[in-house]
Length: 295
Length: 295
Image: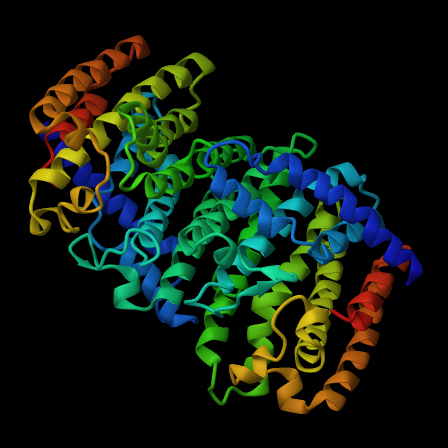
């Protein structure tokens, strides 16, 4: 656990340096667009997805410098989705990562474009990664476009999440929406790390099963935090799920049962690491961190 | 000219079939999202960018089936930009390609997500193109992400275009904005066709110069059409540039002078084809068509 916390700090510095290099400077034109991109990217995100990617990469023996651009790309995809999700037409949230959301700090048009180009630059970052063979870059772009798109990916999940507001969605439906909206990119982070390290099909499938369970654990703990933590602690508006009458694990099962489910799932996540037959302390530490985080 | 018109019809059928295959079916979940994507993609767009790509590909000897996915990808990028540009926070337009714009037909959230996933699926289409070597796919994704992104690309141009509304932008600034917003993707279409055919660096540079001039020609004629044609003929709201006090070639120079500039530019476009040392009837025909189109 202490190791994972240290690791997250180490990865945070690596990833921030890479993002600073990959994003256009805020004194180049269009200044407002570039400032908006940087406002949201450097807002103190926890960089959990990059940490999962680096951890999976190290588990299978990848050098960090081969992981860094793809990890930055995934953080850009994640951030683009946050910027667009916060827009008035979507979740309409003024607060993100403890400060004004992108459209509040700038304006809606700039926020839409900032999200758009973060997605563009994410794919660009991988396409230009000279440390990876072209075939690996292509495989990573396939992985990320599947995880971010539709059907079954992040954007599909956001669409269904919006449609489910105030509806009587079943727990199976809730779980499926969560899997797409949040789980798919978390799972892709784990798989990407393994692919960068040159994992074989069996290993890739095994880390995929770990990533799927970790994604679900992340979502359940996220639901619990939304229902139990303050806006100040979260850095984003708390209690949003209840206010939007959104079906969540917390609202469906109650906090106590949802917490038990999370604890059970943490065991599943750990079990999923066994078939890897590798030193998995780092991945276990990250799973613990996802379980016990307070924001 | 007759050949180019026939060619456009032929390419239109090819590209529509490819788009139908690449986009998720409208009876799969999320149905509303997939319907919105298809609403905008199959709205009767002229497929000029795909036609440029196929024409450049044929000029350098590429089989059409190697061009089709990348051409579809470019049309998806173009359509995503139209969907987002039409949003209330951007150009706020209710009409596109002769029918309701995406957010009018569906809703803003769905339109934002439809644009987002069209971008995602554009990169995905190239990444999964088994007819192209991984190195070619990577090069095409580099090209498209440069053309669509920032700085210097389509989204950067849209940001500057919005900022220029009602300002006293110089003709140099106007020209630069047009080059980014419209020219970059048109130029990339020409270059992509050549790359797919295996063009060498010199040929790629030459087709790039052709593409740059063709992009500018497209924008000048677009400005003239906006100022002179009816909404009915254009299939999108006419007179928008004047209403938004947008600087254009037409408003800056007047229609007559802008038309002369377009004619001069058409000669430049033709001259740019000479160094290719290939049979360029098809590319010339497309340039003529861009010059003389009525919508």
